[in-house]
Length: 345
Image (cartoon, rainbow, N blue to C red; front, side, top):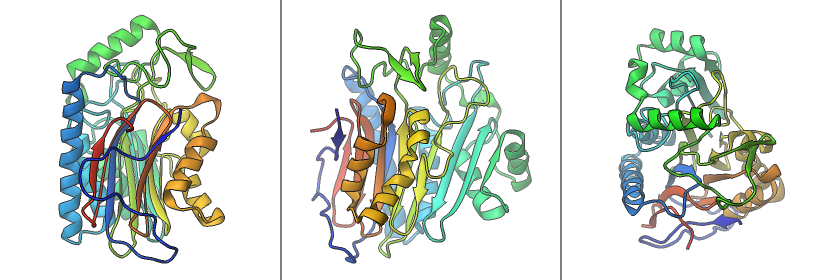
């Protein structure tokens, strides 16, 4: 099953623009791909309200002429601070019962980027990734090196307990009892029926698949693009596991043409270099944004990988695509278009 586009909420859907035609600003956010069709309505509404709040924050910032990279950081900080999705507070826990978080951010102007992995005390990993980009000679710092850099930069630090919720402790207990990696027991199925063939990761069976990584992509009225992604990873993951979210070109990418943030099975996204491929087919095949997103979701997820992505183009277009039951997402543009959705219509 392949799904693209977003549910109608208000406004006018962004049109495909002619080559060279410049649009206004646009923004998209996601809270993860893979949603149980029986997800309680209350949970759906909570997710939609959070995505709407984040869109409103981003829209206000864009109207105030904040640069796209600043808007991305601002929106993802909001998502990291709310325990609803799997990033920052509310992150999935390792087999040892700790939160190990990762994030990346990329500015399409000059293709500048920063990423962090294995952070355990940084309240907002996306802001540390931004500092790696702006204040270090490197693009990627991890584990103790990232923590030391955070202290040097004076970012807000908290005890690891801050990130741990009762829900996540319960998820970890279930995962250990099942001797399995679990993405999120609140959303138990994605792309497969309970009695269907087992889902796999890197060829190995997993009992539950449902990621809730967060991300944001932004383009301003001058066509400048930026993207960011943040996550706690997998529930009951091995300590030291790194997914696609902090990997530039896999989970996050921004250039002159577009900005992309991915979510889903990290191992499949890494193999397919999903985010960079969207830009590549636009650049080398001349595809439009939605066509590029559709092509990548259909052609680059091998081995039954489950994933989704959001994207904006330098022309002010916005698009999304996913190959599972749903994706928490929202988008808006300068023309007055705004949508928040989970399913496809």
